[in-house]
Image (cartoon, rainbow, N blue to C red; front, top):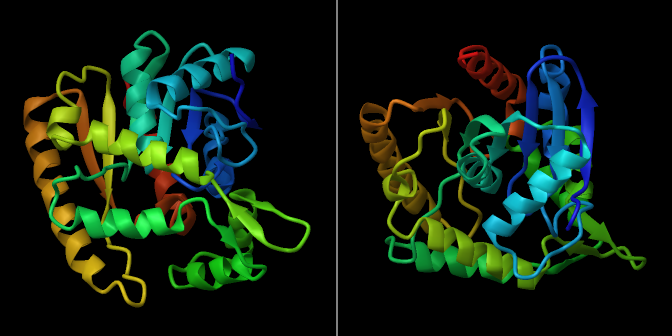
Length: 284
């Protein structure tokens, strides 16, 4: 049994469990959690190999779902609405499907992926693999803060999130997380789940789900101008699948936030408002 690092933000009301994205940590939720505690009890969890949680091998989503359930038991959380960003959104949906008696609902904030055959996927995968689990130089945190400023993320919030998502070494360098072996397993899991697209992944979902797409694209990094075309095409494909799902599966709700993929750091107020409104509308 593996217990994951968790932070109880407190609050009173319906229970929320917050899950972060790939290469991130629960600190990404600090700003939204502070707002959500006004009407909810809020707990956030670090995934295995991320933040302050121990690693696991192999890193599979069914195993992560079990470890989350064990961790919630240890914190006295029998039932919750599970809210996840990016990779966390995928896991939130999988947790709800595996634990129908424990998950009232799930919220997926821009947690979508492309199959290996998706046009351009090879180039994206190569870029992700090149940075997976690397040792970053001493100026890594400062670079992250500067980059975050392009999205209007305050420096203090960006720095705290960047420090929580990496492990410092005595020589000033940083171990980016997850480490490479786990990162490769995570990518394999995402390719497996989304091999046939979003529609096939969510086939038969009967738990209340809110699927939220970013309204704006991440700008491509220098030398990756091709990524803009890829992300536009991929976002359009996801939008079309989500629109069709909203007509055929009544348990699924669709929304959009005027932000990039970094929405819980960029616009924590909008994220908190959307999540709180969804929870208020749940039956019971």
